Every structure is written in C-alpha cells, then in structure tokens.
Image (spheres, rainbow, N blue to C red):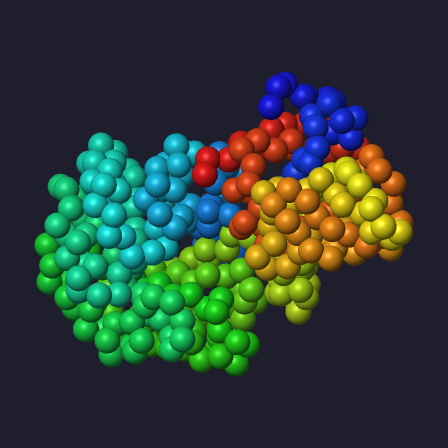
Length: 357
C-alpha cells in the first residue's frame, strides 16, 4: 500500500474492496480490556493470532500486557519480533524446528520467557529432547469432555505434572485451560473450580493459571478472584471486537463496560441483475464468513450469500455505490489482508496496520 496518510479511504484511490481499522475503537478496546484485567487482579497476555500485527501488539504491550499469546512457533517468532519479552504458545508444541528456535532464543536472551502447554508424557518428552541450556517452561493443560486438547481429569493432570517435575529439560510453571467451548456459565464455573483444584495439587511456587477469557472473562474474574496463582487471560478477539459473533457473546453484555467494533469493509456494487438484488465486489477472500456473514451498515440491505470474490445482497442499490459492512469473527478477518489503513472518524488514514500471517 503506497503512502496514504491524510487521504480519505472513501475517495477510491486505495481501491475497493478495502478493510479499515478504526483507531478510536481499537484504542478504546485495548484500554478497556487492560483496565478490566488490572481491576480484577489478573494479567492479560492477548492472543496475537487474532491480528499478528506489530503495530497492534505494540499498543497492547504499552497498555501493560503481561506478554503475548500465540498458537504456533511461527507466530511466536513474529511475536518476538514485535518486542514481546514473554511469549506463551497456547498449544502442545511438537514442531521440532520451532523448538530449536525457541531453545536458541532462550539461550541468547536470559530475560526472555517462553511457555507452552502439555497434556501427555509424549509431548513433554518432545519438549525435553529439544531443550537447550535453559529448560522449557510447561503449563500442564486441563481439558474437558468434548473439548479440544488437555488432560480430561485432574488426577491425570497431577500425574503429568509429576512427570514434568522428574524430567530434565522442562520445568513446571502452572496450569492451562480453555473454557470457550463450554456451553454456558454453569459449565464454565464448574470447569474453573476444577482448574483451581488442579493448581492446589501442583506444589509449584508462584504458579500460573491461564484461561482463554474472550467470552467468559466476567465469570473468570469472579470465580478466580481468590485463587492462589497468577491468573493470565489470553483474550484475543476483544482488540477489534465485531458486529456479529462477539457482539452477541461479549461479557460486557452482562457487566458494565463496552467493546466497539473496529473493523469495517467497504466495497462497491458491481451489478444489479434483478430488482432488489445486487452483487457487491467483496467475497470470502476479503471478509470472514465462518462465524456469520458480514453485516451491512446501511438500512434495508441484507447479505444472502458470499462467494470467492462476490457477495449477493438484497437491497435497493445502484451500480458503483459504496457499501460498508461490519464483520463477524476478527480472528479470520485480519489474515485476509497484509496491510490495512488505520482511520480516524472522518475515514482519513492516520496509520497503517501490517499483518504477518
């Protein structure tokens, strides 16, 4: 993207379709979530896989983030490049090349902290086999029935923790969990009780307890308030929020506060082949669709379906007309763009957001 600072994105010189990031909403969301974590005695390690952007990560770290969370060692390298002194891979790492990089980075920089999850002896053995002079910090993961990874019982987790303590090349740092796939608040509360029980069995000095924290951070803030561990939220989607999936599920629907949608896609009407039907030049390559279709900002317009490069909408539109859309699920929005304009309320470009997917 050539230098567009000061230019209005609506003048068409940057082309369409175009996803923009609203600066005021972005900065509001970062400050809001940082304050929530601080006010509830928790740390925040934002999940950078949402945006994988150095510009956004720098804002999150400047707001007091404990570190950055990622899903892969490739993302960990990017997070390290963003200036993170502490990186948590919220996953089981079996990527040998990535582990060699992490071991080298730990050896090169004594101040660097690198953490990852484990739920099996086999996973611990892979970590240990690739450790350098500094051991890998391990969070034993507690899952739940029907969930993704994680030990299915506290007893199994405690046994694995003992294995970590006995294995050279790794050290036990605490417990990890993910509550986002549970059905409701009652299930989340029950799971958090099991996580606390797991921490109490670890016999680790200054343990960590990390949880997801996008849909249930209000419940987490209440239930884990007295936990004898450092509670670390890995919330990610909050940073830009959305007009769909997370608008419906944010805990700020239940407690005071708000997040604001920061992502918006602008596209032009290409064709009006039938009365009340329009084809817009925006498709699956430009906007997310996995957790809901884009949401038109104008009245009387609705999205019927999306194709690779087109979106079929119902509405009284004209060929060449510009239409704005909110999005649903930011985690599959950023990865479709390598550069996004950061805009002020008048849609003038005040910066550039680069992604590193």
